[in-house]
Image 1 (cartoon, rainbow, N blue to C red):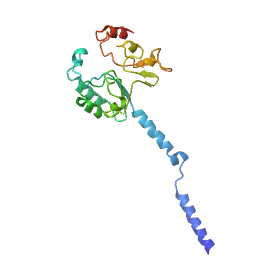
Image 2 (cartoon, rainbow, N blue to C red; image 1 turned 120 degrees about the vertical axis):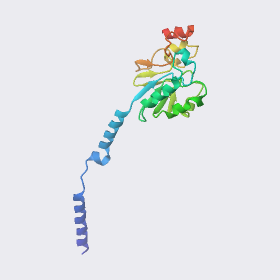
Image 3 (tube, rainbow, N blue to C red; image 1 turned 180 degrees about the vertical axis):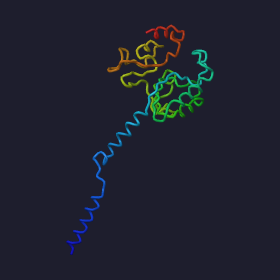
Image 4 (cartoon, helix red, strand yellow; image 1 turned 135 degrees about the vertical axis):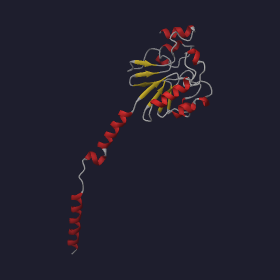
Length: 202
């Protein structure tokens, strides 16, 4: 009798197994759906570069002929462009003056935010910037074989004696083919100072 009971139980299990849907290894591990999700996310992710926003820096209206509401326009354009899946890389000089006047803008940008500190940002540490709106902050980085800096990587060694990229004196890092930077604004002859003119000509 005991043997028959075990036999009936075995038959029941076999019937249950036969009714189950047979899954492929990819379906069992979720690899197939994972690839599709990954592909979708990759297509939706964009990287943006911006520099020298100088939020709330009133002198920009004369130095660079920006409109009086340039800070608000910059903020509005960013809000209308980036998505939460995007990454915005800021090449430095975020804002000038009291950070309380413009920090709320940075905090509101709905994306991942990376800061390459500029000459007006280095009065605060990288960790400070990460506590005030940015997900990551540094002084230079390589992105897809492009060196990202605030000042021009090689010419900056002649700027006021300050050498934030001193290690780059002899050229770009290995594997890099281009240096993308900010700092020069739209005043290509420098800000009317001989040392800047000498640097920017290079």
